[in-house]
Length: 369
Ligand code: CA
Image (cartoon, rainbow, N blue to C red; front, side, top):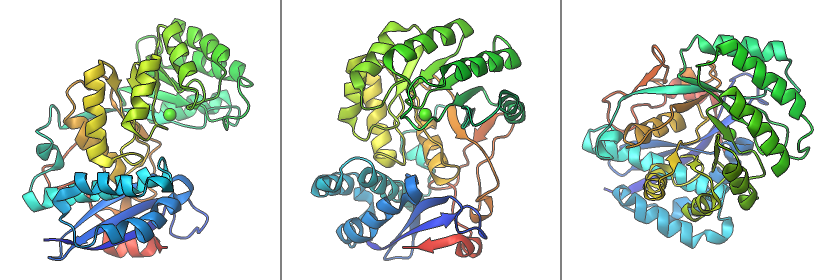
């Protein structure tokens, strides 16, 4: 059995709006007619990753054994290192890896978590990850959205502040007012997290972090620029609240640098680096260093399910899985779209990922390169 063909395409979240946001998917076919599906990081529609898949990666995969997915990924990441290597290339290789694991599950007629050595849990709690709470949204609107999302029964809520990373500290009063109001809304004991999206200086981050500690927030995500690794570590070391980072890290070496700087919770993303193979390596790394691995994941479908399989097999799952703002935008495109029931995502025993495209609906929203 050999890889015969690779499709790389976008799916438009709204079929009638060409300006709508897009996801980046792959489908890998074998010469005996089987297939697996994968997803790349969708930054700018994932076009950079999809382009690399079509032009640079697919030629190196045709004819290969899909079960050699780790060798194939390592070979291509080294051969193509000068294309990046971080970001678009690692996202492209992640998409392929997820598809090859999906294919492997189908070949062995087992869900991926079984092939990973078994699940500690197949009913997974999640936290509602809620973006866009900065000055662009009123305090009342922030509270209304949180009330809505509480109806899904999340185990925790994370409020994200996205200020573009260039106007450091400017919005701290607004952010703190909202952090306090959200705490009042949900009560003292409900788990909350705060995501700065790299919006602060070191001093600003420590100031915000002290308030979050007083408010009993669970973790404080990416307080300073992701590339200021020492500063990230300094903030982590000076605060008692858990400081997390790593969603903009694309190598295990990069994660080690964060850990050595003082970060004690790392957040690699399965569609940005390494896919399932890569996230397993991150889990081993976190285990070896005694830090928490709480994977980042904001895609609603393939990336989300792939992440759930790894989380199911994770020994020390200290925090719930991330679930980004839900919508109905692509549910019709998939046969078994993931939805939480009573606050839990239940992994099925279907082989592979347990999710696939509905071909007729896919055709309405698919955009090939
Ligand atoms: Ca984040």
